[in-house]
Length: 220
Length: 46
Image (cartoon, rainbow over all chains, first blue to last red; front, side, top):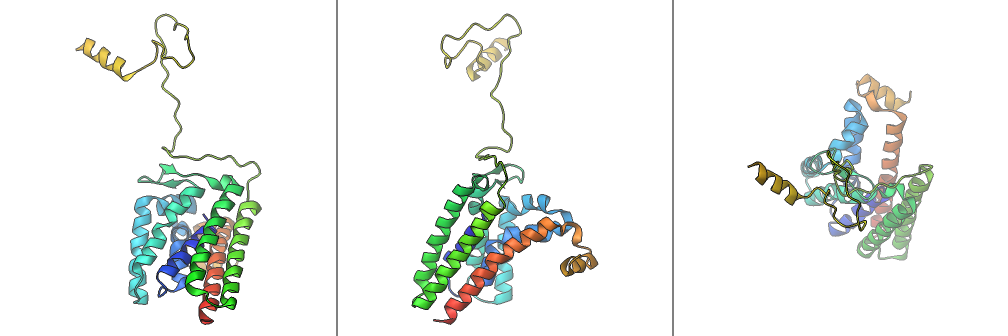
């Protein structure tokens, strides 16, 4: 997710106005900044796995909240923590991110459906800007600034979605493990398989759990 | 070599300060600037 992280910062700001905006936006993009910083040593691609999987995300969020509390001595550490943690669910929509292992990644991969990605992020930006405006923009001049900010964020998002889109994007959403596996296949060692009467009917050659149990009982 | 890369090379940290990493950092800086400046202007006018 790109502009959506900034939108989340705006929504969080309307919950706790005492948190300064710059550290809040930095926290909402925290795993990405940390990826660049750690990438100086080990390379960004490798570090991206560790900054965005759940244990790495929680570690970074706790460290950022502690740093904020120590450095700023203001309330709102939990807002910094929330901003950092909300990075993962936001990125789930647009890419693949790690769960408990950095390489077992899930996500809806909307970066490869630019129109859908723009629709999701634009909706989030407009909703969060409305929340922010309700809290902070009481005059016409303030509302104009909110509109300008929303337009700038939408422009940045459009630039990312359409300016840097791949020529032939392949959409690969994943809600399972990192590797796609074929169905179990069962090859008869003796004789040929009888033809199926119906395409979806269970054939005698289908490997089932009960068949495995029966064979184990026979062996016993 | 730009100034940032030169500084990072002096510090021994420029292993992945590639064009791609610079582009990513630039992309992340844009919404930070937009939202921080807009928030500052809006709250100053209160």
